[in-house]
Length: 191
Image (cartoon, rainbow, N blue to C red; front, side):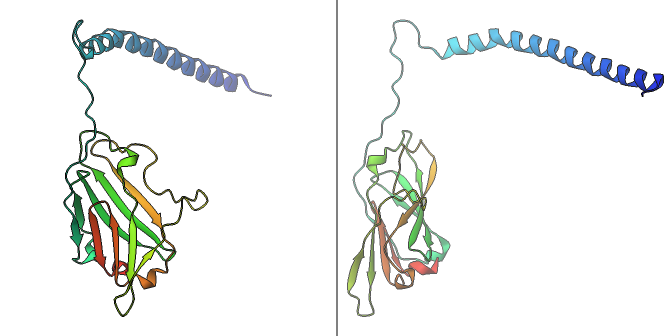
């Protein structure tokens, strides 16, 4: 059984908590209602004037190709410009299971549509210099591999891509990975 002093303390605590809750609600209501006029004014300022046409959103357009081959040290993960996409690629490496990782930054003021990205290619050379084109494996939800974009890449946004090839990465000591107008050539394992 609770003593009178214990009951009084619990009652006082309950009253104090209730007072704080109610005072917070009244202040929250005042803040919420005072911002409605400001919000309506800012929305009205963004709407086009009556009788005018709203500005169109920029659309993506390709540019003339300008192939780029990166042969410098791939360990530094150098950036490479893709002039036709107005984008920047970065080679990030190849994993033991044959996944090639790259990132892409959209330098456009418009979204980059998924269909604008070309399929990558991987060519390895044997000790005699004979090239062999390696197959790109299809999308695989179980391994999380999605080749390319499934949605447009926003303006000035960066995305990471994983492309899985049917290759032992130890054979990529003399290889060329190409996507778009950019080609990384050399020891892809060195990254």
